[in-house]
Length: 262
Image 1 (cartoon, rainbow, N blue to C red):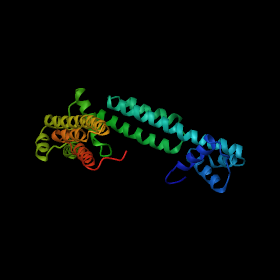
Image 2: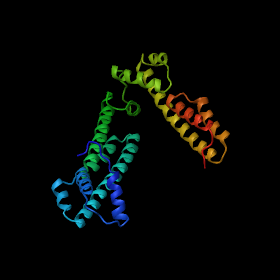
Image 3: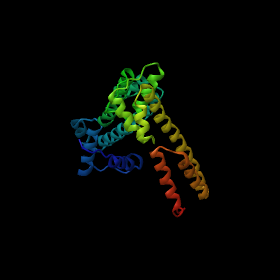
Image 4: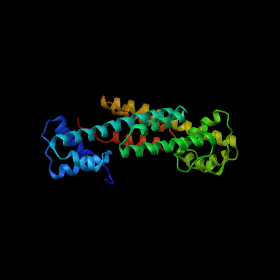
């Protein structure tokens, strides 16, 4: 199997043959493409080679390959979105089930690998929720959100070394200075307040920049560049999260240049 999977060629072939009605020519290159891609979507080499004995069966093989690619992509995308929604609602078991359901039916190896990776991450997050102990292999803010919910459910926060390290890493990304962080880490209550501040700043900042980008785009498209620029200036007047400040600054720089050609 190819180390780097690229399905553009097989999609182009399917578009020409299955949608455009172009005759399928079993050239050496086409045979190699079908054979390789068939194995990438979970069809055995003997079955693929057998299908390549005639144009009719090769066309059926092409149709099956593209079906597996498209169905698997749609299935994984739908499950991923549902998984993240359930995670954000605090239903980590439901989030895990989304990927288990994918793995129960998926046969394309690359999609199975992605589902397994997301299931492993959700399973580890569920472990954080159950124990309160953080993991070095999980996204920091996802763990903070899980811990915040755990506190809301009445569990005490354990000010372990790993948690302190996580808070020290994430506090600067929320625009919190070192001195403020160290003061907060002197007690579990201070750490809880620090955690809430980090998450709140990201939540509010995300809402702020999203709304401002929408308004900016509408004003820019209407020809009101001054109004569009003001949206980003308003963000910069109050935003403290470096990520969202950088986004606003980048958009503002783009608006300072010549207007795009229509």
